[in-house]
Length: 382
Image (cartoon, rainbow, N blue to C red; front, side, top):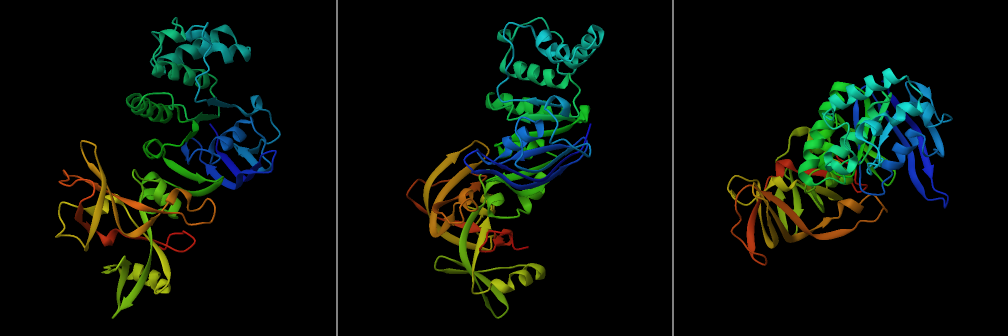
C-alpha cells in the first residue's frame, strides 16, 4: 500500500496541444479515488503517467513519498486493468492470472498460493481450468482484475473497466469492486466518464475537464456544493439547469429575473451578504431538476409557465424537458473555451405522472431556496 501524489503535472502532445495542465492531487494510503470527466479530458492520460506508460512534460509523481518519474513501469509496483480485458484466449483462467507472477520468476508454491487466494476472493476458484471464451463478460472482467491483483501491487489502477459490460452487469460489478477494494485496502485510482459510477464508487471523486482539476470532494459534497458551473452540470443525472440572470434588491428583498418575471428570494443572512456585490450585475443561477415541481404548485416559492418539449417516463420518475422565457447555459462547454454557449431547453425531475403532451403549456413550481449562484467566470458564489 502507498499514498500517491501528483505535483504540478503537465503533459503536452507532440503537436504542442496540452493534455494535462498543472495538475495537483493527493490520494491517501488505502483510498479509492475516482477520476471522472468527459471523454478527452485527460483522466486516462493521468493514469498512464502514474503507471509509467506516459511521461509527464513537467511535475513530479510520488508513490509512498518517493519520486518515481525516472522509474520504469515495472519498477513502480503498480497494476493496471484496462477497458479491454486483453486476456490470452489460448490460456486457462489459472494461466492468465499466474502469467505476471511467472514473469516475476516467483517460486511455483508462491504462484499457486497467490492464484488460489485471488481466485477465491474473486469467486473464480471453480473456473480456473476454463478458457476466456467459456466465461461471461463479468467473469472475464474479474479474471483481468485477478491478473492485476495477484501481483500484490502498491497501487491499483483501473481505466474504465466496466465500459464493455451491459447496464445491469455494470451495477453488479461496480458493487463488487467497491467491496473488494475495502477488503484489500489497496490504494486505488479508478477512471470513468460515467458520473453515476463515480458517485457510487468513490470515497472521494476528482472532477476533471480539459486537463484541469475542477474539484475534489466526496460525492455528496460535489452534488450539494459544486465549485463551478461545469461541476454543477456534470454531477447529477440530469445535471443542474443553469441560466444567466440579474439580481435586484427592493426594500432589503432580493429578487431574481426569470424572463419577464421578478421572483422574490428567501435566503439566509449569510447567502444574502455573499450576493450583495452582484446586485444589478449579470450572474448565473442554477436549479437542480428535482427543485422544479409539477404536482404541487401551492407549496413552492414561485410559479412559471413553460412549453413542454418532451417527456421521458422512467418508471419511478418522469423527466420533463421544457422551454421557458429564460435561456439556459450549456454547462458541458462553459469552461472549455471561455465562451458561453446557450441552449433553450431545461429539465425537471418529477415523481408523479405528467398529464401533458409535447407542445402544451403547463405551470411549474420553483423551489427558489435551492437556487445556486455563480459569478461571470462560472465560480460558485458561496
